[in-house]
Length: 115
Image (cartoon, rainbow, N blue to C red; front, side, top):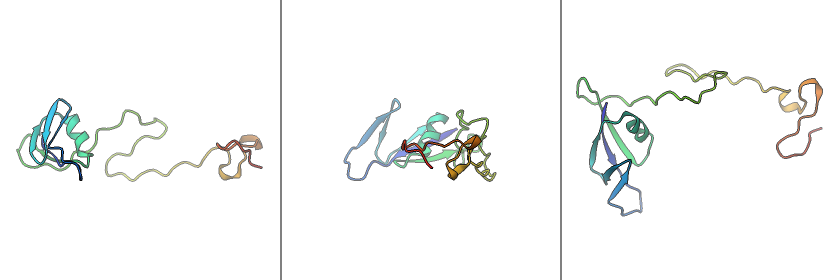
């Protein structure tokens, strides 16, 4: 995967270049990058414009989907692209009633027990 990445700079900042990730980005000048992880990271950064090129055709490609997270909980797996988000499970311990399992009082984070 390759991309032409352009650093747009920051409004109100006269900085002409940015040194980051062992690269020098000149404001409003495209730099060709072939590091897929960096391309994915820069696609979510508002200070960069990223134009991805399809390796096979050389044509502009659609935006890259973010890499799957390794931090997803096995109890709540992440949705796959195009799938609807699953509903959140009901809270344990009675929810807003303030009563935990067995009728015990739940103490909210403020430290004041609910009645």
